[in-house]
Image 1 (cartoon, rainbow, N blue to C red):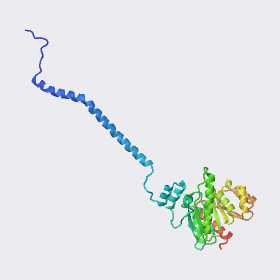
Image 2 (cartoon, rainbow, N blue to C red):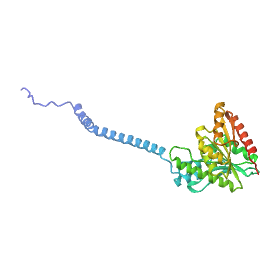
Image 3 (cartoon, one colour):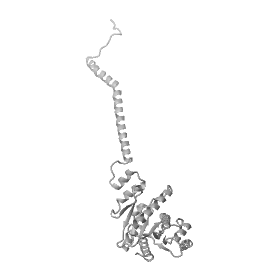
Image 4 (cartoon, rainbow, N blue to C red):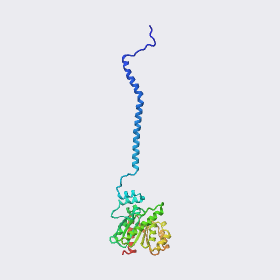
Length: 305
C-alpha cells in the first residue's frame, strides 16, 4: 500500500538526544537581551559613579578648604570678614621679622608696619610710604633706608597704605590719611618730635597732603621717582607755605631740559630755598647710592637733637 503523505518520519535516536540542547540554546537566546540590558545598565551606573566622583573632586579643588589656617593672624582675619588687604597683611606678617612687625590702630582699622628704632634715637624719625604692602618685604630703596638709617640714629617706620585704585578712591584716601596720622602719633609716643615722609610715585599726593595738614609734625619730604602729573601747582604752593624741606629724587633717564623744568615748577610754587633735586643712578647700585644721598641730606638739613 502506498504511504500516506501525513506519515511522520522520526529522526534517529541520536538526533532525539540533541533536542534538549537545541531547546536550551533557544531559551538562552530569548533571555540574552535581558542579560545584555542588565549589563548595559550596570555599565552606565559605573560610568555615572565615575563622573560623579570626578565632579566632586573638581568641586573640592575649587571650593576653599574649611581646615584652620596655619597662620593664626590670617585665620583670624578671614573669620572676621575684613577687606582683602587685611588678609594680605596677615599673610605678609608671617614672612617678616616678628620682632619688627608692628600692628597700629585697632579692629578693622588696624594695619601692619615695620618699626626699627635707632641705636641712639634722634628727635626726628622717618616714615616710609610704599605704594604696595608687598614692598615691605621686597628689596627697594625704602627697604634699604628702613634697614640702614637706624644705624645713623634715624628711627624708621615702614607703613602699609591702601592700594591706589580707581574704585572707592575717596574712601581709600581717607583711610590712608588716618594711617599716616596714626603713624605720626605712634612715633610721638616714642619721644619723636618731628618726621620726614618718604614717598614714591603713587603715594606722593598722600605724603604731600599729610605734610600740609600736619606741618607741625613734619619737617621733611623725600619724593622718590615721582612723575610730574602727581605734582600739582596748588599742592606744591601749599607745601612751600608749610615750610617743608623737599628732596626730589628723579630717575636717571630724565633729560637736562626736564630737570630744569622740574626745578622751575617748584620755584614758581614758592620753593626758593627748601628744595633740592638729585638723580638716582640705574640698577641696584643706584639704590645704594641714593640711600646714601638721602642719609647725607638728612644729616645736613636736620638736627638730631
